[in-house]
Length: 79
Image (cartoon, rainbow, N blue to C red; front, side):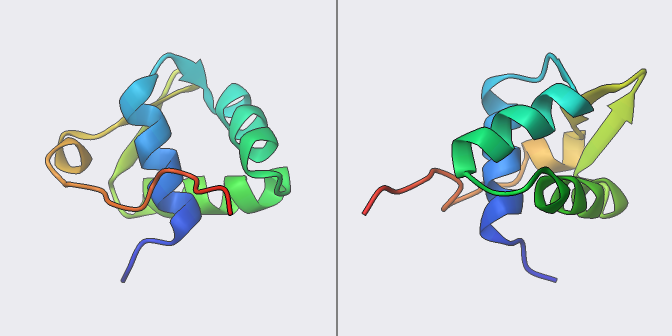
């Protein structure tokens, strides 16, 4: 299954800063992408189910597997 643009953005975001709770992450990304928090939660949960992101004590981080993947298209482009 392919990653969505939002999922790529979440991974890109976590590459920059892994020290946020899931709630903080969702709030930040939904604000940056101007989308609903539920959309970010759904994409985050898909990444967790796929084993690319993990939650530990409320904090979200990339798994070792996702750290080895080159993610293109995770940056937001303004048009």
